[in-house]
Length: 177
Image (cartoon, rainbow, N blue to C red; front, side, top):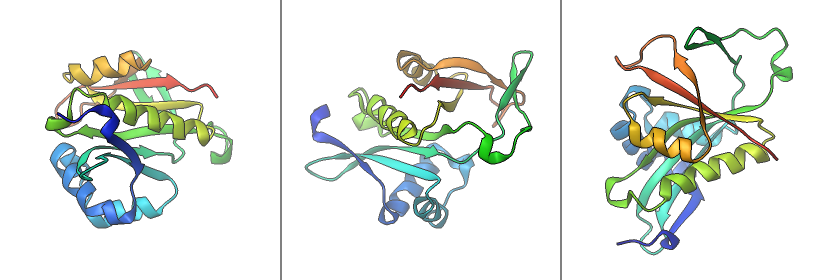
């Protein structure tokens, strides 16, 4: 059993693009991100990938994919969240971070790695002056929903349309500096 202290959270580099593409295909196949697209993201300052690695062997235990690009924002229509068009120029939009992907390999689960990866994403979002961090999760993914709620993410609504034939929930967390 690997103890939590032997897992290090490190920033991914373009050299990690292939491994990330394999994991992305395994856990988020719908994203259609190959190693070239991930490498481009890693070289673009608007995205950060953070890896959980075993400190001794270097084995990859998991990752988190964080997007810092500006988005118009969300508004509610009934119980659904939909994109709202901004009234102000993009530069005036509040900074928000989006967790696009979080995965921990099965043999490393139950050791606090996902919690540490989310904490790193929130830390980086605060460092970039983001006021909020968002993520999407399938309604039936009770384990992930429980984790996010323990980490003070609040249910902010659901997407207006199903994705991958699933109801997708939107969670958000206010960030305080």
